[in-house]
Length: 416
Image (cartoon, rainbow, N blue to C red; front, side, top):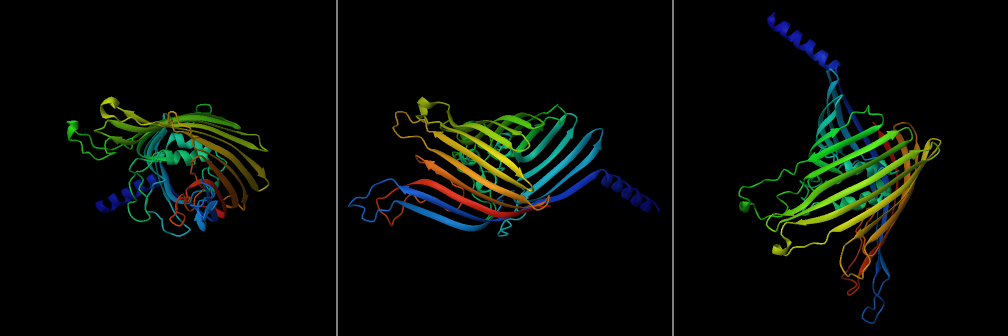
């Protein structure tokens, strides 16, 4: 009899807990036919030494891809009401490659967090978007997806790759420990409560989880094993009615050499805004980043590296047309290599993208996007597809510089 009462009590408690909790399965399946064409131009001139001179080389590819409009994903999220205004939540989100099925729920690298929220705001732990990336995606008409992704995001993502980034865990499973630009692992984040009259904000700290030795002289001589991986950043903004404006700053440690005394960091600042007039919505962002090498004792070690600056901006627009939406954006970036007395121009690139989304329902949409990047003075940014051809054994003595990258996405997106 006692066992029966205990069982009934347990079921009653479970029933109460279920009534106060919710778990949701969600996802996006997005597939597109995509084409890419990347063209390099010969930097030389026809001579007797180059009888097989060619003006340019084009590498192209057509493929079935995913995430042309929204990133394909599957996830689980849930919330438990703890009473007194407190709530505990979790969010596990995995990328999927539905075009070939290669990547399923092998990692939750899109997001894996647990949090506690209340009138004080929210404290969130785990892998999450960085504050500095939010402006790239929120103020991009294409949401940093597909060939329309703005150059500010594309260039900064490559700019922030760790020195000596880790290889894939296994074939087809990316290693999350190679970049902090879009997302950072091992983070503690704090978000302001949503009842501040339109003001919002967050701060985030990501642990590098590297070993520290005492005395320091016993530190292993391997590169990037003392401080690489640390991230600290924050974002503050104001959203009220048609206006949304936000600024953010982040510092990501991407490399270090303990014995030489160097630490390489990427420091990023950006400002973004949008304004919805109803018949048209305008977007804009300005971004600055510095790949900076801090040297403890430069005159002793003889290691003085040139810092590299990256500046970029985007302007964009969306126009609702019945059940559809026209999207367009122009973005540009320029690198400053800080090479003294150089007569060469610094690399730069610009991009134009235009597309149309037709909503068949709240969950299903058809879309098409075309885009073109123009590289100058050694920049090598692409929309995807094959790499630029810069040298080839079939044309000895001839060199090529990346020039243009053209591409398109035509696809369907279904959310659930």
